[in-house]
Image (cartoon, rainbow, N blue to C red):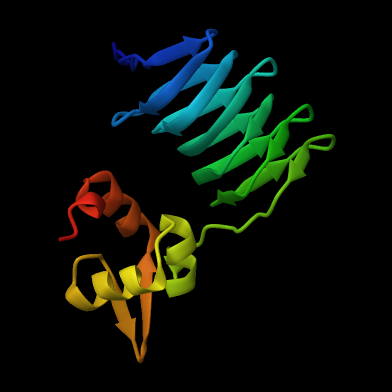
Length: 169
């Protein structure tokens, strides 16, 4: 007889009002139904419930929005805006699904597998000089093609997650 192991999922359901920085190193299923202000950095699934009101910069893998968000959203895998979603801010999804009725007030730049210097500047919110210094000194994962640098998004995400972005001296 074959037994299937049931994988326990880490589920966190937040109905409270919170502010600050929430960061998860391991994949979780996070659902926010209340108010949140600050920054969110998640792995796994993030759901912003219909009753949620968020003012934050959000980075995550799979993000589903049913409530209101004001801030920047980076979705490494997929961003889904449900019919009642209201997003004010710039979004950077790898894949995007917007349901009829959802409101997006801002810009959308799709994440690609490779970024050029200008895209990396926006992605990391740093200056051109900083990107060029990192690339030329080998501090950041980069590939040179002719006279141009290109950066693999997954390698950049891993580099940022490792904490090296703060230790570039």
